[in-house]
Amino acid sequence: MTAAIVTRVEQLIALALDPAASEAEARTAAYVACSTIRQHGLTLTEPRGGPPLLERTRRCRTRFSAPCLLCLRPYSAGETVLGRPGVGAAHLACVEIARAA
Image 1 (spheres, rainbow, N blue to C red):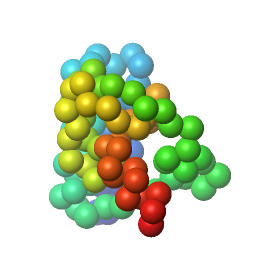
Image 2: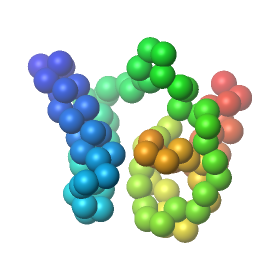
Image 3: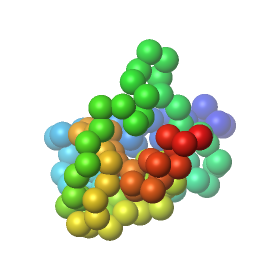
């Protein structure tokens, strides 16, 4: 059952990152993926050989609310976050905590 759940989360994340998806569809896919991850207590990791989550990020002001990649709590539209295009963003405080660990 866990393999099916992981596959479903991967599909939802792919849809959320798909440039052809509408903004509403991408947002819904991201929300459902995050909810599923929390519900089943899954832990996400970068693929082997992939860049760490916090590399090549930049400060930016968000245009809409979305879940933080580190704590999964939403950040607000207009909030300054640290993000990477096509990947997502995290609260500045979450990034500081992650870097200190």
